[in-house]
Amino acid sequence: MKMVSAAKLKKAQDAITAMRPYAAKLTELLQNLSGAAQDTNPYTKARNVKRVLYVAITSNRGLCGGFNSNIIKEVKALANGNQAEIAVFTIGKKGNDILSKEFDMVGHNVAVFDDLSFANAAELAQQLMDGFVAEKFDEVHLVYNRFKNAATQLVTVEPFLPLVADTSEAPSEADYIYEPGQEEIFNTLLPKALKMQLFKALRDSFASEHGARMTAMHKATDNATDLRNQLKLTYNKARQAAITNEILEIVGGAEALNG
Image (cartoon, rainbow, N blue to C red; front, side, top):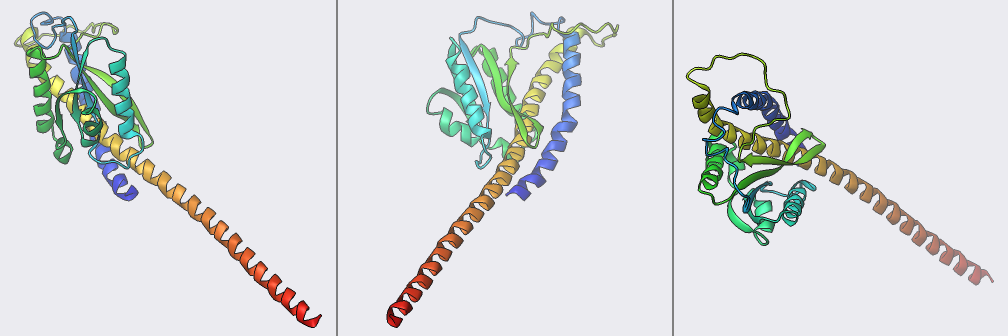
């Protein structure tokens, strides 16, 4: 299982590494356009928060250490610290099995990782976007494991909707000429950027899953080897003690006969 996960990890790691610069550049472009349609685009309208949706991204299979349990714990902690009504959308079987027993479930998907493509991710993102526009929930947050390396996965809570302009960074001083216009470009790019954001989160989680499973199987192998050595030592000690007792009994019997 370690070897299988290591092979899959290489492909998944290459995919998320290649994708991140594109996603970052798209986000930067949207930041430059963020003032163009902030008040008119339905995905940027902030409302009074009455209902919050958490999208929990887990895996369909176990044997990957704390990969799934960390996401489940994070969702529960977020729910306990939030005064609004909480709803959950699960991606992955393991998260759905646990969270569906405790939270109001908006939906779940366990098939997206069978064919992880932008088209499937875009379909999921569109469901969340339609629900937000229909005011079924007022905020959407993604909860997933962000891939750092094979041994490290970072639990990440990422705002998804509404899109809020990042004012922490200074605006670009470049003087761009936009064609056909800033507002039209913003309204066209924003839905694609949201779909790309979910796709990136799924890619991150997919790579993290294989990294976590590879690490978990490596630790399991080490633990099994240690346990085998301990049992072997215990067995040899018990065997040696039994042989010693037999020798003592034979010697004692021989001395009794000679006496």
